[in-house]
Image 1: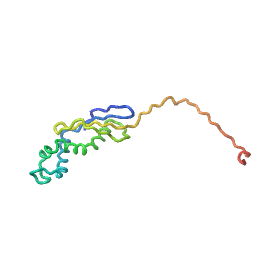
Image 2: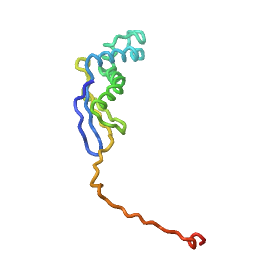
Image 3: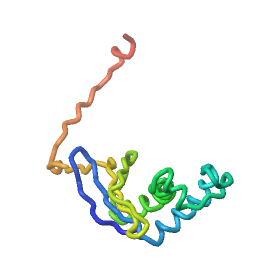
Image 4: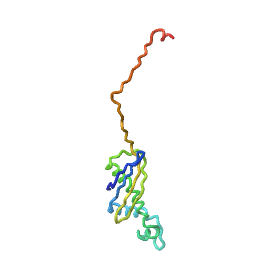
Length: 141
């Protein structure tokens, strides 16, 4: 994981952009194929025995890439938050910027963070304490 940018937006929102290297992404795609490839039936092949290239040709090249991103996102998101040094208080809104097995994946995430509070001049303020006295007549009443 490599943190590309950390941009502060309005209303205590931050936009993180980070990338996942190609080697990690490619191995996650292969893991997703091994796990999910058994679900797809391709004419001419027994169910679960079709090669990855045939499944991708029939159902789309990014079929296993999105599964790989879903697998890699939590761990890489946490690393990006830690590297950026922000304190997250909301649910992330991820967006895939680019993904390929040759170049890896780049993600953009918007997330709510703890607001920064600036304190004004508070030293030197005085407060008057009103002391109430209670006598026996007030207690009897």
